Image (cartoon, rainbow, N blue to C red; front, side, top):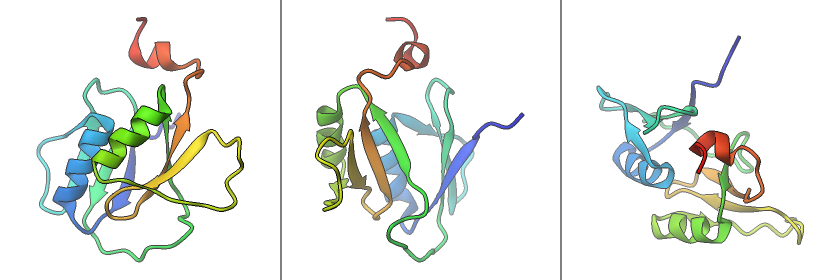
Length: 129
């Protein structure tokens, strides 16, 4: 059996990316960490880690891989992520009824914020409310 243990992003500014992604996902840095590599994990230890690797890598657009972040309140999350330094990415081919907003972190890593208010996994993920 396999599970996704960690998703690795190549970054230029490790400290800035740690700051953004820990705030964006409410993750914490797993200690010990290296000067050029950090593993971020969910505070409740559920879900995949996000590892940040300070190795120069050319940016490609469109990216070959990106994160889809599910949001209970997409509008609020887009605003919160923007306040943390993310930017919305305009795309003229986005359908009018799209359930996603394309964004990028301060270094340009793309991700989508998905309107997942009706996702049936919230109770399992967050525990019965």
